[in-house]
Length: 76
Image (cartoon, rainbow, N blue to C red; front, side, top):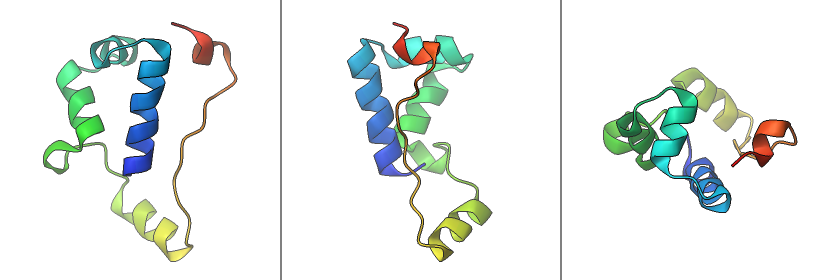
């Protein structure tokens, strides 16, 4: 994922008063995996697959994240 997406996820965690460990529990991931994804540690940070990255770049598109409007977006 790009830095904008990572920053929005971190901001949303703070907004909801959640930790990365909380996010790990909600997603069934390990806290280490969540930290790697949000820090892009060692290139194992949940990168966009190379083909998708190339297609987005070729079409001058940028991946962003927006808050959802479903019930889960308002849970704390």
